Image (tube, rainbow, N blue to C red; front, side):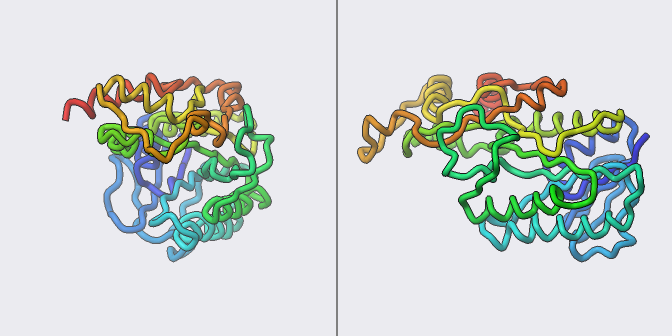
Length: 288
């Protein structure tokens, strides 16, 4: 049995904590404002940046899984950069020869618009964030990548799943073709949880992990292909904006990301493409 801290026990953190408890691990978790934790988890209530050092347990693994309170520079700095700096400071003092190993959950938004059109973009591709929020995420990653603690940065692409219905809502309203076509990458929420659990088990088994993994399913897809597929299953017609031209139908923007490194390690996707993932979601969505 290992001791593990989930720093940021939201949707992904709660799912991961539950799986770890089921495996018999000693699981601690931090939440900022809501004193509700999965069964079997030792909860810590408070802001990571304000908790005293004594509140942080000595553990084998730390998962930093934050959710920003907005999509702007200040919110991202508070959620990702400040918490990374705080945990790095705390666990450098608590570190032993055996750990802890830090998993920092990031985003593929650290690859910027200059890299649009890249085929099979992977972990060896330099991060060149173009958005303000992507730049903050890259700064937070570097706290770990350039630090002294054992670490793995996991960059998830667009997360979808139960409760994340923005795409389905737009298509249900006939607004799926409101913007020019582009390449998109996604990963089901359950694969986020399962892949983080998998990486933790690999580390605890004594295997060496890379410093970066991309978490995305096996099928990059153009936005319009996805819209057409979902709309057909919903039996809804989509309006095409008069501002869009024939050229807008060809995906000239976006990236095609590869998770080959994660798969080579042995991870098998629950939902290898949008087809399997959205089939499961549509059953519940259309029954409401």
